[in-house]
Image (cartoon, rainbow, N blue to C red; front, side, top):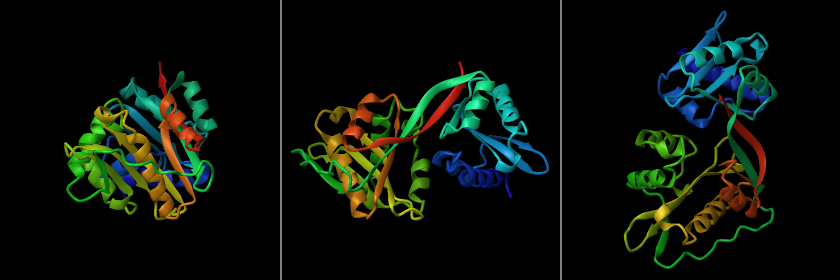
Length: 278
């Protein structure tokens, strides 16, 4: 078994034990598709590990059977020795992560909210009219580069989403949950330019839960109601899939986005935080 597969196995055990996955989708994909830069601590086998992204973002995990043995502390110290600028994700911000961060003098530098709502809860999902001059359809083969261009424009400020590459997109499109019908596109009829999109997600293993995966609006088309339109279309698509609950992730300091989702009936259900030495 490769080091990457061993690290994923540890993460699976930790997710079952904690009720929170220690690794993001991006990290799991990287571990599955590449041999990434990683740091491992071993004692009779691999018992703890950390994935260190090129930008210094870190996700680490300690096997539930080997916790309180100082492995997490050693991992953090090892990573900081190599990357003093490292920033550590703590999914769920569990007590153990809080204690470890405090022991290393780290503080929260970012928080990512998880929000959710029941499909049949209030307010009712209502689809606004498509503005004049725009048209809507689902993703088709050949839309890949147009979607990537939109994603880069919409998320040029975002540390992860705005850097998505064709390889990243292809990897996601190869996942069991990928559905072209679940990626809704809004086009400017005059220019033919992709103006907005809503990528939804339903994991086959959890068909009762849908996700607002990525909502993107081109900055040049903002102020025309496209964000409201494409969000509602995505929610309606998830409803048509028969999901009972819809979830999403949003930056905790994005007041405008949080307010928008609250108006749509979403409430915070969890938080992932990022710790760093400041």
